[in-house]
Length: 334
Image (cartoon, rainbow, N blue to C red; front, side):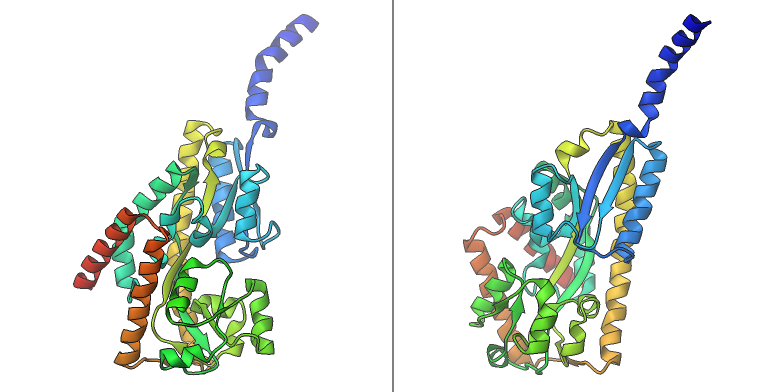
C-alpha cells in the first residue's frame, strides 16, 4: 500500500510543481503613476487576465506611486535585476533607444488628426526597434500635447524671456527649444514644481492639460499658450531577457492582453486630456491665440531646436526622415 502511494505521489508531483505558484514567473513592474488611476486600473486588469489565462504561470506585480523612484531609477533597477519592467515616459527610454522619443520633437504636430496619421504609420516600427534594443513593449499610451502655461499672457518670444520657465532636468528637447529661444530655464524635479510655483521660483511650466490638473499646477497659472509644443507618451516596458524566460505560449498571452490594455489606455487618455482642457477653461484659465508673427517665430525656434538635436545625434537620420515624410503627408491630408 505504502509503495503504491509513493508511486502515485511520484506521478502527480511533477504536475503539482508545474502548476504551483512557486514556479510562477513574477514580473515586477514599477511606475510613478499613482494607484487607483485609470493607468493602474487597466494594467491591473490586464495582469489579472494574464494570470488567469496562464493558469498562474505569469504574475505581473506592480509597484505604483513612485515607490521605486523616478523613471530613471526604475530603469536602473531593471538593469540590476531588482525589477523586470516599468511604465515610463518615452523620454526616459532615450538612453536605450533614442528614436522611441521622436514623437516629442518640438512643434511637430498641430492637430490630433496628424498625430493619429503618423502613429498609425510608425508605432509598430518603433516598438519593434525598441525590442531589438532589449525591451518588450505593448504600445504607446498618449500623454497628449504639452502647452506653455503661465501667470502671464506671453504673446511673444520676448515675453517668455522675461519669465522663470521650468523644464525637467535632462529634457533634451526642452533644453534645445529654450536655448534656441535664448531662455534660461529653471530645472527642478517634478515633485518640487508646485512649491516653485507657490514661492515664485518659477511662474511658467510646460505640461499637458491633464498633467496640470493632476499635479495641481493649474491653481498657479492664468494662461495657456494655445500652440502644442510637444507630444508626449508613455509605455509599459519589460526587460527582454526576463520576458524570454516565460514560455512562448504565455508570452503570446501577455502580448495580446497588455496590447489591448494599452489601446484602452491610449483612447482613455485622449478623452481625459480633452476633458481636462475644457476643465481648465471652465476654471477661468485663458487660452491665448498667438498672432501670426509670434507663431512664426516659435516655429522658427522649433526648427533651430531640431537642428541642434540633429547635430547632437539625438535621433537617427533615418528616423528624422521617416517621421518628417509622414508628418508632411499628414499635414497635406489634414
